[in-house]
Figure (spheres, rainbow, N blue to C red):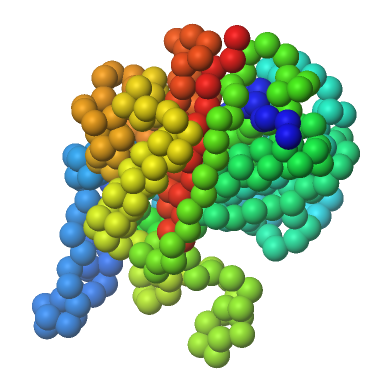
Length: 384
C-alpha cells in the first residue's frame, strides 16, 4: 500500500492581536460593573464578588502572552465581551472557508503542484460555523478542486485525526493527495467573562497537503505511523447546537457573554481544568511512548515534539515523560505564548513554523489532545 508524505503546510494568521494586559483591562472593567450591579446581593452573601484577573496570573497559569483574533474590538468591549463578525450572504465565502482558503493557498504554493492532483479536502476543526453545506466542500469549490470533501470534528485533536484519515485514503488508493484545513475561530465559542478561561483561545487557520510517497518529490516528511484514541469525558464541553431551540427555557442563538454569566455557560466552552490536566497528561504520554515502541522508535531520541498548544505546563510535563529528561531548547516547540490555544491548529502551527534543522532520517512527533477526550499521534521522518 502506498505510504504517505506530509508535502507542504500553510498558515493564516489574523492581523489583529490582543495582549494579556488588554484582555485583563476589559475583563476587569466588566467584572467591576457586575460587582456594582450585584452589590446588595454580594453584601448579603448571596453572590460571590468577581475576582479581578491579571496578566501575571494568565502567563503563569498558561504560558500565554497574547493571541490573534478575527475581531479585537468586540472582545475588548466590556458591554459585549465577544467578537463581532458581520453576517455574510450565502453567495459570499464564509468566514471559516475564507480563513482556510488563505492557509491552503500558501500550502499549495509551497507544494508547487497543480490542485488537479488533490483528490479530497478535509476540514478538521473544533467548531463549524454551520451544519451544512460542509465547510470542506465550500473550500473545495473556492480552490477549484475535484473529488470529494467533508468536515470532521474531534475538537482539539481534529488535525491529527485528519492526518490519519488522509493517510488511510492514500493507503487505500482512493486518492493521490489530500488537502486538510483547520480553520479555528475559537474566540467565538469562548466565554470572555470567565476568569479561569477567558485568556485561553486565539483564532487561526492551518493547512496540510498529504500525498502518496509514490508521486512525492524530494523533501517533505514520511508519515511513519498514526494512532488515535478517544475516552469519553465531560471535563471539556460545549453544549451549543440546534437542539437548544427545542428546549422550553432557551432560545436558539448562543448566549452573549453577559447572558452566559447568567447561567448558560454550557453553551460556550467550559472545562474542569485541573481534572483535564491530571487525566490527559498521563494518557497522552503513555500513548506516545507505546506508539513509538510499536514503530520501533526510541522516544528519547525524537528530535522535536510538536504538541497541541493548550498549556505550557501540560506540554512541559508530557515532554519530560516522553524524553525521559528535561527538553533541550527547541525540542519541545512552544508557540502558544504568541498564538494561545488554537485548538486543532496548534500542533500544525508549531510544525509549520519550527521544522528547520532536520537532517534526512531525523524523526519527530506531531501530537494533539483535547475534548472527548481525544488524542492523536503522528510520527514523521525527514525525507531526503
